[in-house]
Length: 351
Image (cartoon, rainbow, N blue to C red; front, side, top):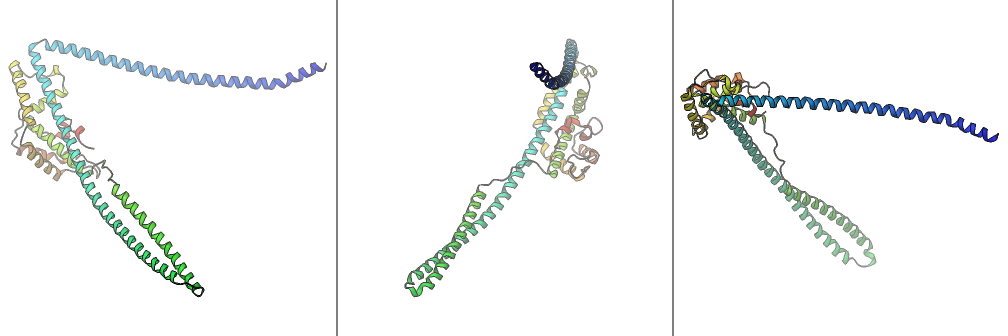
Protein backbone atom coordinates (compact mmCIF):
# COMPACT_ATOMS: atom_id res chain seq x y z
CA UNK A 1 0.00 0.00 0.00
CA UNK A 2 2.79 2.39 0.92
CA UNK A 3 4.68 1.61 -2.32
CA UNK A 4 1.61 2.38 -4.45
CA UNK A 5 1.17 5.74 -2.76
CA UNK A 6 4.83 6.62 -3.24
CA UNK A 7 4.66 5.68 -6.95
CA UNK A 8 1.51 7.75 -7.41
CA UNK A 9 3.20 10.73 -5.76
CA UNK A 10 6.26 10.32 -7.96
CA UNK A 11 4.12 10.23 -11.12
CA UNK A 12 2.23 13.27 -9.90
CA UNK A 13 5.50 15.16 -9.39
CA UNK A 14 6.89 14.06 -12.75
CA UNK A 15 3.82 15.18 -14.74
CA UNK A 16 4.51 18.96 -14.89
CA UNK A 17 8.19 18.40 -15.55
CA UNK A 18 7.38 16.09 -18.45
CA UNK A 19 5.00 18.69 -19.93
CA UNK A 20 7.67 21.39 -19.60
CA UNK A 21 10.19 19.23 -21.44
CA UNK A 22 7.68 18.57 -24.19
CA UNK A 23 6.96 22.30 -24.51
CA UNK A 24 10.67 23.05 -24.80
CA UNK A 25 11.05 20.39 -27.48
CA UNK A 26 8.11 21.80 -29.43
CA UNK A 27 9.56 25.31 -29.14
CA UNK A 28 12.96 24.12 -30.39
CA UNK A 29 11.31 22.34 -33.29
CA UNK A 30 9.41 25.54 -34.15
CA UNK A 31 12.56 27.67 -34.17
CA UNK A 32 14.52 25.06 -36.10
CA UNK A 33 11.74 24.93 -38.68
CA UNK A 34 11.77 28.75 -38.95
CA UNK A 35 15.55 28.76 -39.41
CA UNK A 36 15.31 26.06 -42.05
CA UNK A 37 12.65 28.04 -43.94
CA UNK A 38 14.81 31.15 -43.73
CA UNK A 39 17.85 29.26 -45.03
CA UNK A 40 15.74 27.70 -47.78
CA UNK A 41 14.54 31.14 -48.94
CA UNK A 42 18.13 32.37 -48.96
CA UNK A 43 19.29 29.42 -51.04
CA UNK A 44 16.34 29.85 -53.39
CA UNK A 45 17.18 33.54 -53.93
CA UNK A 46 20.83 32.71 -54.53
CA UNK A 47 19.85 30.01 -56.99
CA UNK A 48 17.58 32.46 -58.83
CA UNK A 49 20.34 35.08 -58.99
CA UNK A 50 22.84 32.54 -60.31
CA UNK A 51 20.34 31.32 -62.89
CA UNK A 52 19.78 34.91 -64.09
CA UNK A 53 23.53 35.45 -64.26
CA UNK A 54 24.00 32.28 -66.30
CA UNK A 55 21.15 33.37 -68.55
CA UNK A 56 22.76 36.78 -69.02
CA UNK A 57 26.14 35.20 -69.79
CA UNK A 58 24.51 32.90 -72.30
CA UNK A 59 22.83 35.86 -73.99
CA UNK A 60 26.16 37.69 -74.14
CA UNK A 61 27.83 34.60 -75.58
CA UNK A 62 25.15 34.24 -78.25
CA UNK A 63 25.43 37.91 -79.17
CA UNK A 64 29.20 37.54 -79.44
CA UNK A 65 28.81 34.48 -81.65
CA UNK A 66 26.36 36.36 -83.84
CA UNK A 67 28.76 39.30 -83.99
CA UNK A 68 31.65 37.06 -85.03
CA UNK A 69 29.52 35.36 -87.68
CA UNK A 70 28.42 38.75 -89.03
CA UNK A 71 32.06 39.88 -89.21
CA UNK A 72 33.02 36.68 -90.98
CA UNK A 73 30.35 37.28 -93.62
CA UNK A 74 31.41 40.90 -93.90
CA UNK A 75 35.10 40.13 -94.29
CA UNK A 76 34.35 37.44 -96.86
CA UNK A 77 33.65 40.32 -99.24
CA UNK A 78 36.97 42.00 -100.24
CA UNK A 79 35.38 45.42 -100.60
CA UNK A 80 33.77 45.16 -97.19
CA UNK A 81 37.03 43.83 -95.74
CA UNK A 82 38.91 47.02 -96.64
CA UNK A 83 36.03 49.01 -95.16
CA UNK A 84 36.35 47.03 -91.92
CA UNK A 85 40.10 47.73 -91.70
CA UNK A 86 39.44 51.47 -91.93
CA UNK A 87 36.66 51.18 -89.35
CA UNK A 88 38.91 49.56 -86.77
CA UNK A 89 41.81 51.90 -87.56
CA UNK A 90 39.54 54.84 -86.82
CA UNK A 91 38.49 53.28 -83.52
CA UNK A 92 42.21 52.84 -82.82
CA UNK A 93 42.70 56.61 -83.29
CA UNK A 94 40.00 57.27 -80.70
CA UNK A 95 41.50 54.85 -78.18
CA UNK A 96 45.01 56.16 -78.85
CA UNK A 97 43.92 59.74 -78.18
CA UNK A 98 42.12 58.72 -75.00
CA UNK A 99 45.24 56.85 -73.85
CA UNK A 100 47.32 59.98 -74.53
CA UNK A 101 44.94 62.07 -72.41
CA UNK A 102 44.96 59.55 -69.55
CA UNK A 103 48.77 59.33 -69.66
CA UNK A 104 49.09 63.12 -69.76
CA UNK A 105 46.74 63.53 -66.77
CA UNK A 106 48.67 60.91 -64.81
CA UNK A 107 51.95 62.60 -65.64
CA UNK A 108 50.67 66.02 -64.57
CA UNK A 109 49.25 64.61 -61.32
CA UNK A 110 52.55 62.92 -60.57
CA UNK A 111 54.51 66.09 -61.31
CA UNK A 112 52.17 68.15 -59.15
CA UNK A 113 52.44 65.65 -56.32
CA UNK A 114 56.23 65.67 -56.56
CA UNK A 115 56.29 69.48 -56.49
CA UNK A 116 54.05 69.52 -53.43
CA UNK A 117 56.19 66.91 -51.73
CA UNK A 118 59.38 68.85 -52.47
CA UNK A 119 57.82 72.05 -51.16
CA UNK A 120 56.55 70.26 -48.06
CA UNK A 121 59.94 68.66 -47.40
CA UNK A 122 61.70 72.02 -47.76
CA UNK A 123 59.25 73.68 -45.37
CA UNK A 124 59.48 70.76 -42.95
CA UNK A 125 63.29 70.88 -42.98
CA UNK A 126 63.29 74.65 -42.39
CA UNK A 127 60.89 74.37 -39.47
CA UNK A 128 62.72 71.38 -38.04
CA UNK A 129 66.09 73.14 -38.32
CA UNK A 130 64.69 76.15 -36.47
CA UNK A 131 63.23 74.00 -33.68
CA UNK A 132 66.44 71.97 -33.41
CA UNK A 133 68.43 75.19 -33.13
CA UNK A 134 66.14 76.37 -30.31
CA UNK A 135 66.55 73.04 -28.52
CA UNK A 136 70.30 73.17 -29.01
CA UNK A 137 70.35 76.63 -27.45
CA UNK A 138 68.25 75.39 -24.53
CA UNK A 139 70.59 72.41 -24.01
CA UNK A 140 73.64 74.70 -24.02
CA UNK A 141 71.94 76.99 -21.52
CA UNK A 142 71.23 74.04 -19.20
CA UNK A 143 74.83 72.85 -19.46
CA UNK A 144 76.15 76.27 -18.53
CA UNK A 145 73.72 76.38 -15.61
CA UNK A 146 74.86 72.95 -14.40
CA UNK A 147 78.49 74.05 -14.69
CA UNK A 148 77.77 77.18 -12.68
CA UNK A 149 75.90 75.16 -10.02
CA UNK A 150 78.74 72.62 -9.85
CA UNK A 151 81.23 75.44 -9.26
CA UNK A 152 79.02 76.87 -6.52
CA UNK A 153 78.69 73.41 -4.94
CA UNK A 154 82.48 72.97 -4.89
CA UNK A 155 82.87 76.33 -3.18
CA UNK A 156 80.31 75.44 -0.50
CA UNK A 157 81.95 72.04 0.07
CA UNK A 158 85.33 73.73 0.61
CA UNK A 159 83.81 76.22 3.03
CA UNK A 160 82.03 73.44 4.93
CA UNK A 161 85.29 71.46 5.18
CA UNK A 162 87.01 74.48 6.74
CA UNK A 163 84.38 74.91 9.45
CA UNK A 164 85.71 72.51 12.07
CA UNK A 165 85.00 72.65 15.81
CA UNK A 166 81.75 72.59 17.69
CA UNK A 167 81.48 76.37 17.65
CA UNK A 168 80.94 76.17 13.83
CA UNK A 169 78.12 73.64 14.16
CA UNK A 170 75.35 76.00 13.05
CA UNK A 171 77.43 77.44 10.26
CA UNK A 172 78.21 73.89 8.98
CA UNK A 173 74.51 73.02 9.22
CA UNK A 174 73.62 76.10 7.18
CA UNK A 175 76.18 75.08 4.54
CA UNK A 176 74.78 71.52 4.46
CA UNK A 177 71.25 72.82 3.88
CA UNK A 178 72.54 75.06 1.07
CA UNK A 179 74.41 72.10 -0.44
CA UNK A 180 71.26 69.95 -0.35
CA UNK A 181 69.20 72.62 -2.06
CA UNK A 182 71.96 73.11 -4.63
CA UNK A 183 72.12 69.39 -5.34
CA UNK A 184 68.33 69.30 -5.88
CA UNK A 185 68.62 72.19 -8.31
CA UNK A 186 71.41 70.40 -10.21
CA UNK A 187 69.23 67.25 -10.48
CA UNK A 188 66.25 69.25 -11.75
CA UNK A 189 68.30 71.11 -14.34
CA UNK A 190 69.96 67.84 -15.43
CA UNK A 191 66.55 66.21 -15.97
CA UNK A 192 65.39 69.22 -18.00
CA UNK A 193 68.51 69.02 -20.15
CA UNK A 194 67.98 65.28 -20.74
CA UNK A 195 64.40 65.95 -21.84
CA UNK A 196 65.64 68.60 -24.27
CA UNK A 197 68.26 66.18 -25.65
CA UNK A 198 65.60 63.47 -26.12
CA UNK A 199 63.30 65.95 -27.90
CA UNK A 200 66.16 67.06 -30.14
CA UNK A 201 67.01 63.43 -31.04
CA UNK A 202 63.37 62.62 -31.83
CA UNK A 203 63.06 65.75 -33.95
CA UNK A 204 66.23 64.92 -35.89
CA UNK A 205 64.81 61.47 -36.68
CA UNK A 206 61.34 62.72 -37.69
CA UNK A 207 60.13 62.71 -41.31
CA UNK A 208 57.43 64.75 -43.07
CA UNK A 209 53.95 63.31 -43.58
CA UNK A 210 53.48 62.11 -47.18
CA UNK A 211 51.28 64.26 -49.43
CA UNK A 212 48.19 62.32 -50.52
CA UNK A 213 46.19 64.93 -52.43
CA UNK A 214 46.52 68.04 -54.54
CA UNK A 215 44.79 71.35 -54.07
CA UNK A 216 41.65 72.36 -55.94
CA UNK A 217 43.63 75.00 -57.85
CA UNK A 218 46.22 72.43 -58.93
CA UNK A 219 43.57 69.93 -60.05
CA UNK A 220 41.79 72.65 -62.01
CA UNK A 221 45.02 73.52 -63.80
CA UNK A 222 45.66 69.85 -64.60
CA UNK A 223 42.16 69.44 -66.02
CA UNK A 224 42.47 72.56 -68.16
CA UNK A 225 45.72 71.20 -69.62
CA UNK A 226 44.05 67.86 -70.38
CA UNK A 227 41.10 69.62 -72.03
CA UNK A 228 43.52 71.74 -74.05
CA UNK A 229 45.32 68.61 -75.24
CA UNK A 230 42.01 66.95 -76.15
CA UNK A 231 41.03 69.98 -78.24
CA UNK A 232 44.45 70.03 -79.82
CA UNK A 233 44.20 66.36 -80.77
CA UNK A 234 40.78 67.01 -82.25
CA UNK A 235 42.07 69.84 -84.42
CA UNK A 236 45.08 67.81 -85.47
CA UNK A 237 43.08 64.80 -86.65
CA UNK A 238 40.28 66.96 -88.01
CA UNK A 239 42.57 68.38 -90.70
CA UNK A 240 41.78 65.25 -92.70
CA UNK A 241 38.39 64.60 -91.17
CA UNK A 242 39.75 61.69 -89.14
CA UNK A 243 38.55 63.06 -85.79
CA UNK A 244 34.90 63.08 -86.80
CA UNK A 245 35.24 59.75 -88.59
CA UNK A 246 36.72 58.27 -85.42
CA UNK A 247 33.79 59.55 -83.38
CA UNK A 248 31.36 58.07 -85.90
CA UNK A 249 33.16 54.71 -85.70
CA UNK A 250 32.73 54.71 -81.93
CA UNK A 251 28.97 55.29 -81.98
CA UNK A 252 27.92 53.30 -85.05
CA UNK A 253 28.28 49.67 -86.00
CA UNK A 254 30.54 48.56 -88.82
CA UNK A 255 27.55 47.68 -91.00
CA UNK A 256 26.25 51.27 -90.89
CA UNK A 257 29.40 52.97 -92.22
CA UNK A 258 30.96 52.97 -95.69
CA UNK A 259 34.27 54.67 -96.51
CA UNK A 260 34.05 54.49 -100.29
CA UNK A 261 35.54 52.12 -102.82
CA UNK A 262 38.60 49.94 -102.34
CA UNK A 263 40.95 52.72 -103.52
CA UNK A 264 39.46 55.16 -101.00
CA UNK A 265 39.85 52.64 -98.20
CA UNK A 266 43.45 51.84 -99.18
CA UNK A 267 44.28 55.54 -99.11
CA UNK A 268 42.89 55.82 -95.55
CA UNK A 269 44.63 52.60 -94.50
CA UNK A 270 47.97 54.08 -95.58
CA UNK A 271 47.28 57.55 -94.20
CA UNK A 272 46.02 56.76 -90.69
CA UNK A 273 49.23 55.12 -89.32
CA UNK A 274 51.31 58.01 -90.68
CA UNK A 275 49.07 60.61 -89.06
CA UNK A 276 49.12 58.79 -85.71
CA UNK A 277 52.92 58.43 -85.79
CA UNK A 278 53.34 62.12 -86.67
CA UNK A 279 51.02 63.13 -83.82
CA UNK A 280 53.22 61.39 -81.25
CA UNK A 281 56.31 63.25 -82.46
CA UNK A 282 54.72 66.64 -83.17
CA UNK A 283 57.20 69.31 -82.07
CA UNK A 284 54.79 72.24 -81.92
CA UNK A 285 52.36 70.64 -79.51
CA UNK A 286 54.05 71.87 -76.32
CA UNK A 287 54.03 75.62 -77.01
CA UNK A 288 50.50 75.60 -78.39
CA UNK A 289 49.32 73.48 -75.46
CA UNK A 290 50.76 75.93 -72.94
CA UNK A 291 49.16 78.87 -74.75
CA UNK A 292 45.76 77.18 -74.97
CA UNK A 293 45.84 76.13 -71.29
CA UNK A 294 46.59 79.71 -70.23
CA UNK A 295 43.71 81.00 -72.37
CA UNK A 296 41.31 78.45 -70.88
CA UNK A 297 42.35 79.42 -67.36
CA UNK A 298 41.50 83.06 -68.04
CA UNK A 299 37.84 82.31 -68.87
CA UNK A 300 37.01 79.02 -67.11
CA UNK A 301 34.26 79.16 -64.49
CA UNK A 302 33.05 76.46 -62.11
CA UNK A 303 29.75 75.46 -60.54
CA UNK A 304 31.17 75.66 -57.00
CA UNK A 305 34.36 76.56 -55.14
CA UNK A 306 35.28 72.88 -54.77
CA UNK A 307 34.53 71.89 -58.36
CA UNK A 308 37.57 71.03 -60.52
CA UNK A 309 35.95 70.57 -63.95
CA UNK A 310 34.97 73.83 -65.70
CA UNK A 311 31.52 74.52 -67.08
CA UNK A 312 31.69 73.58 -70.80
CA UNK A 313 29.94 76.76 -71.95
CA UNK A 314 32.48 78.95 -70.14
CA UNK A 315 35.38 77.73 -72.31
CA UNK A 316 33.50 77.35 -75.58
CA UNK A 317 34.62 80.71 -77.01
CA UNK A 318 38.30 80.13 -76.32
CA UNK A 319 38.23 76.66 -77.86
CA UNK A 320 36.66 77.97 -81.06
CA UNK A 321 38.98 80.98 -81.18
CA UNK A 322 42.04 78.78 -80.75
CA UNK A 323 40.82 76.44 -83.47
CA UNK A 324 40.65 79.37 -85.86
CA UNK A 325 44.00 80.93 -84.90
CA UNK A 326 46.05 77.73 -84.78
CA UNK A 327 46.29 77.42 -88.53
CA UNK A 328 44.55 74.05 -88.45
CA UNK A 329 41.62 73.92 -90.87
CA UNK A 330 38.61 71.83 -89.84
CA UNK A 331 36.07 70.01 -91.97
CA UNK A 332 33.02 71.18 -90.05
CA UNK A 333 31.81 73.33 -87.19
CA UNK A 334 34.18 73.70 -84.19
CA UNK A 335 33.70 71.10 -81.48
CA UNK A 336 33.85 71.70 -77.74
CA UNK A 337 35.61 68.52 -76.62
CA UNK A 338 34.44 68.88 -73.02
CA UNK A 339 30.79 69.38 -73.92
CA UNK A 340 30.80 66.47 -76.38
CA UNK A 341 33.13 64.30 -74.27
CA UNK A 342 35.33 63.83 -77.31
CA UNK A 343 38.02 61.16 -76.91
CA UNK A 344 36.17 60.27 -73.64
CA UNK A 345 38.04 63.20 -72.11
CA UNK A 346 35.78 63.39 -69.04
CA UNK A 347 37.03 60.04 -67.74
CA UNK A 348 40.62 61.35 -67.93
CA UNK A 349 39.93 64.45 -65.81
CA UNK A 350 40.85 64.66 -62.14
CA UNK A 351 37.76 65.04 -59.90
